Structure formats: C-alpha cells, structure tokens
Amino acid sequence: MMHQGKQILVTGLLLMLFATIGTSLVGITYETTAEKIADNERRAMLRSLNQIIPPERYNNDLISTVLTLEPDERLGQKEPSLAYLAKKDATTTAVIFSVIAPDGYSGAIKMLIGINADASLAGVRVVSHKETPGLGDVMELKRSDWILGFNGKSLDNPDTSNWKVKRDGGEFDQFTGATITPRAVVKAVHHCLLYFSAHKKRLLGTADE
Ligand SMILES: Cc1cc2nc3c(=O)[nH]c(=O)nc-3n(C[C@H](O)[C@H](O)[C@H](O)COP(=O)(O)O)c2cc1C
Image 1 (cartoon, rainbow, N blue to C red):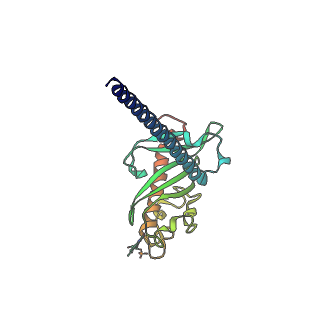
Image 2 (cartoon, rainbow, N blue to C red; image 1 turned 135 degrees about the horizontal axis):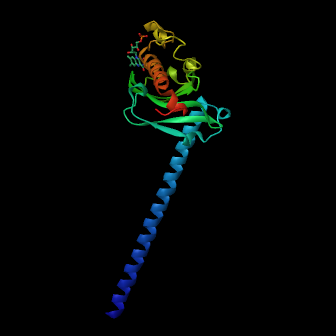
C-alpha cells in the first residue's frame, strides 16, 4: 500500500516536471519568434524607407528617429502615425510620412511619402493596396515608373490647380481605364505636402509649435 502511494507521488512529480519544461519551452519559442518577426518587420520597413531616402543621405538610426503625429485628415490617418526623420549630423534632411489615401477604387492605399527639408518630394512608394491587378496597380514600381513622377515636385511645382490627374485638368497621368486610383494617390501626396508645410518647423526641429 505504502509502495503504491510512493509510485503515485513519483508519477505525479514527473508529470509536473514535464509540464513545467513543456510550458517553458513554448514560452521561450514564442519570445524568440516574436523577436524575429519584429526584427524582420524593422528590416523590411528600413528597406522601404531607403528606397525613398538612400542611406548616403543620412547618418542617424532612421528607423528609430521618429515623431509620433496626431491623427490628421491630410495624412489620411485616424490613429497616431509615425514620421521618420532622416538626419545628417543632427540636421534633419528629410521626413518620411506614413500616409493613407482613403479613396482608392477598393479602399485604402497605404503609402510612404518622403519630403526633403526644402519641401520638395524625395519620393513616394505604395506600401499596400487592394486595387485591381492590371488596372489600378500601375502605381507599383514593379509595374511602371509612374510613382517616380512625384520626385522633386512640391506645392508650387506644379501649382495647386495642377495637382490633379490630366483627366481632371491637372498634370499627372491617369492609368489606362483607371482614373480613380491615381486620382486618390495624387490627392494624398498633395495633402501630405500641405501637412508638411503647416508643420515644417516642428518636423525639422527648428522651432516649437
Ligand atoms: C472589375 C473592375 C475593376 C476596376 N478596378 C479599378 C481600379 O483598381 N482602379 C481604378 O482606378 N479603376 C478601376 N476600375 C475602373 C473604374 O470603375 C472607373 O471606370 C475608372 O477608374 C474611370 O477611369 P476612366 O475615366 O479613365 O475610364 C475598375 C473597373 C472594373 C469593372
């Protein structure tokens, strides 16, 4: 009887030990995987940022030098969003915004928009969208160089009345059979320039707002 009781106790203790080891292993694996995912996301984001502002244009830790911006309609953001600050020897040379064009053909188009300290566009890239393949995806760099047409543009170039697609009397090409997508992108880029102009001093760190 005594012997049987001892056996049950040993079995119970062994079960507890295996359960503890199992739970710890799951915990460690989860933490390592989560760290890896976060690291991969940071690398992917940095690659996207570097397409707009190449590494030779800054010497700070671009992905960690951020401002949290309040939600703003001109950025299409209903939640706070991050602005990445590219700095060369403590001088901000460019700012990259996370922008959402809310009015694509199939909803939101997420973009990164880089604006140089002189208020000209450093570059625009579409990060994600649900536009129709073959029609609305011409804004992707792998489909065409349409998106590069924003490089160097600013609030005065072209002037306000021309910050539209050609179909609406503006300067920017629409896509064949698809005007809604480029119209949404052009509007979002223009609005981002307006946001930059209104908050330039704070963004460039030259004054408190
Ligand atoms: C199935 C389908 C998918 C479409 N996808 C898009 C799209 O992704 N982007 C877009 O701008 N227009 C898209 N269109 C076309 C729009 O309905 C609209 O006709 C067009 O944008 C207007 O451009 P247009 O004035 O140059 O014809 C799509 C149309 C259909 C029937």
